Length: 379
Image 1 (cartoon, helix red, strand yellow):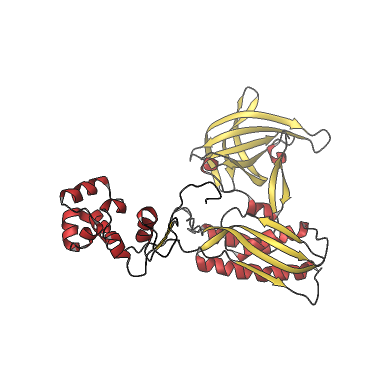
Image 2 (cartoon, helix red, strand yellow):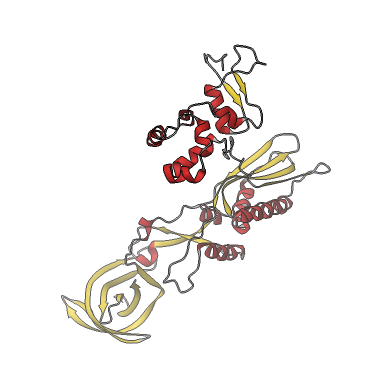
């Protein structure tokens, strides 16, 4: 510290933190040390005797407590330490008891907090052979993931970030970091991310070792499902179920919208990589605003309609579907859509209708065939 420009530096060694602090600030060097030494040593077992002659102010009492002590004539640490604990509690309260214990060198505080436990990690290394087969590498990774996830579950934590490291035969490493969407200790979820990454990683050399290290953790989340949900499932159970579906050779799809005039032909479904599902952010509160959406049937349902003429168009009054007749209290439209010169031709008259039971339905009349169809319902 002197080399860094500090003019006055003092240190102290004692058995209790309070004695060391007072000695470093107010103590004098022992006879065995040079006159200009800044190190004060308190012999073991003499902390209370060392504090006794010092003013109570060296213990840094609160201003209100210092006034009470001064009014009671307590000036030295030894005078405060000689009092009975019950008398101190009755006269000065909890703060006075805490100061009384410090005056007696009764200080259980630790100078250093306990070191946090190391984050879970696992590694495998071999010297007799090298690996180039992705399937064998995946087998090794699966073993490491099982070990790390088990350690996380024992701690009640989930990994917020982890890193997969490949040690190469000719030296060097390849590191691939991962950040799941939510803290997780699920081996299935981890393996989906890792399998997808291994398909894209290009290793320039054979592998002689693999390491998996967790770099950030958080307490495991337990997000409870909606009370109105019939299954009352938790987020973990939903994640586990989805992982089973994905592992069963299922295909995830995502919609891609176009500007086609027909709503049924406006959306195309494209395959989506499973890793994107696990890595996407959580749905926020703004994404769950209640709203009506048109749910189209896989194929239009043929229906029988009773209609009335309105400005040259047949407006539906009631219709009969697979579940019987339904009265219509309102029917707006029609929205006339036609086209398909270079594809299958179409000419539709679409109506948004409100049934007597409150359901909103979309009815359509195929003008080319003069046939009515039920396209879908708003929910």
